[in-house]
Each structure stands twice: as structure tokens, then as C-alpha cells.
Image 1 (cartoon, rainbow, N blue to C red):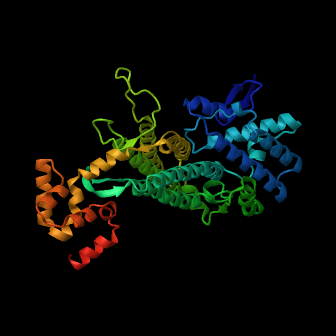
Image 2: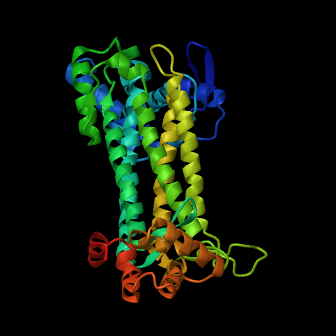
Image 3: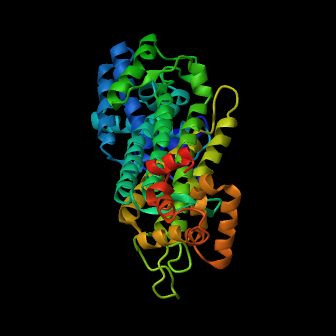
Length: 463
């Protein structure tokens, strides 16, 4: 055992650990199971490496110490000594515990590797504050997780468009307010779902651009105190180079450190994506309901038995799981909203919660979309016979008659058809309201979908 001391007092630590007194106190004070996300740790290490390089070039950090810090960061970035990062994701102190955990591990590893006396604060944290490093690292981590989300959206879109192409000519009854409406096709249905996610891609890319603004160099509350002019002018460019991300320095450091509305906007884009996934999943479950007593228009891939008591019952478990991820993301957005609006004065203390929830959104939404695409969308079958039967027996299909026999007469025909369980088509021929050839043309697929040029000519001429 050995002792380390901080402003609170002395604390005994095992000899073989890389973390120090600040990390150990945080682990005791915050007894939460969720650890700081590995991507956030990696982003912090990347910043520590960039800071060491910048301070060496600026002449404020001795080259031997700087090189030792860089080498330690590189070693840790391989995933080595991951057990040394012991601080929970949720913590008081606006991320100070995570920053110090990284500072201590880097310093102790650099000292162990070289024999140099590397100090966590004076050397590893030189030119920095938790105020600017933690939110900057948090944004870098979020940006690094985002490509998987975007790829999953595009894969889902492609699967939906493939279904739109496969079933482009399959006519079905449209529904509004869960009541029968005019016919449409499954080509249009699947295409509409696919294009819905175009807006999610645009929202996420737009919101992500704001995350590229870094407050690095602002140190405590944006003042730049204890950072050299060289460091302030070069640190963001170095982090951008090391990360491969196109980062830029914030125009107003005080604003960048105290206000986190860009994170709320980013969360809002995930909420919109969750809403769209929820809508799609609800529709799939409804359209596949039955199979005997529901709509039964879609047949979803059978993934597992759905009941411990009812033989051969198959439930829509994949869309149901997506629903639950969507609910969680929407709930996370509420938490992030609260964390954003409750930041006070010169610093938001609640970014640990914000980042934890954002990373959860990115990972869970990615997994949910990959699951939905692979285990559901690609294997969906349309029950063509059921769709055609519903169209032929839907009185609302008679809407095409209104321009020829009038709205009131059409309404009466629909009521009679429903009461007698006969088709409107048979009734209009029986009552000799229109020639049978015209009726056949009006009830063709093209006419029912508003695509029949000849029918539109008839309507225009009044014949």
C-alpha cells in the first residue's frame, strides 16, 4: 500500500494500481455501476496526447516528459490497462473525476515506463481544465459513435426501398384514423417509410456539425487562464489532426463552456429518429396482426415462439423491441433536456448525464435498426391475396365514382353495399348508373390509384 494526498486528506491505495487518490474518492463517492464510456475515455486520452504535443511545441513542457505522456496515451489507446478507469459515468463535479482519472493513469503509467516524475495536474493536465476538456472529449466520442447510426439508417432505408420495388404493384386498402380509405400500393407504403428516414439523416448531420465546435483552450469557464497563447491557438487543430475529425475552435469560449444547447439539439435528432422508428414498428405490428382475426396484410419473419401456452403463436418480437428502444430514447431526451436547462451560471454541471444518455442513444438505436433490418424488414412478405380481397370488398374504393354520379349518390351506394354485404361495383351495374365498360375502367388498379389517363379524360369531358 501507499498513500496519496489531496485537498481532502491522505488516502491509502494499492501499490499496483495506476489510478490515484482523486479516482479512488470518486469511486467511493459515486456508487453507480455504469462506468464512463470507453469512447469518452479514448477521447480524453486523445486530448491529453494532443495537449502534450502542443505544450512541447509551445515550449512549456519538457520534451522528455511530453514524449513520456504521448507514449503512455498511445499505450492506453490500445485498450491496455482499461481496468484503471474506475470512475462511474454519472458523477458530481461536471466530469472532474473522469478528467482526473485519466490524468492520474497517464501520469502514473508514464512514470512507471520512464522513471520520470510525471505529475497528473502540472504535466498531463497542463493548459487544461475539466471545464474545456471534458465537454470537448464528450463531443469527440459522440461524433465517433455517429457513423454507425448513420450507416444503420441507410441500411434500413435500402431494405425498405427493396421491399417497395418488390411489391410496387400490389394494391391495398389505405387507412386513415384506422378506417378504410382509398387504395394505395405497398410500393408507396414502403417507399414512404424509407424516405421518412431521409429527414433523420439530415437532422443528425446538421446537429452533429455543431458538436465540432471545441472549447479547448478556454480552460476554466472560458477565460483561458493557465494556458499559453500558443496552446490556445493550436490545441484544437492538434486534436482535429489526431482524431481525424474536422473540428474547430468555438468563437466564444464562455458560451461554449456554460451552454450545452447543441447537445440538446443532437438529442432531439435522436428523439425524432426514435419517433419514426416507433411509427414504423407500430405500423408493421398492426399490418401483420392476426393472422386470422387481424389485418393480416403482412407476414413478418417468425423469430421465436410467442407463447408458453398457445401453440404456434408467433409474436412480432422484433418491432416490439424497437418500440422499447424508442421509448427509452425519448425518455433520455427528457433527461438531457433537464440537464441542459438546469446548468447554472458559468458551467453546466450535468454533462456526465447528458453524454451517458447520448452514447446510450447512439448504441441502442444502431443495434435496434440493425436488428429491424436483418431480422424483420428483409424477410417481410406481403399477403397479396388478402390485400386484393380487401380492396375488392372495400366500399371506400367507390370514391372513384363520385366525379361521375355525384357525392350523394355514391354515399347512398356505399351505405347500401355495407348493409347488404354486396359490392358497390355490382350495385352500380345493376342500377344501370354507368356502362359496365366504364365501371370496369373505373375499378381498374390504375384508376383506383389515380393513374388512369383515360379515366381522367372521361372525368374531364363528363362522359
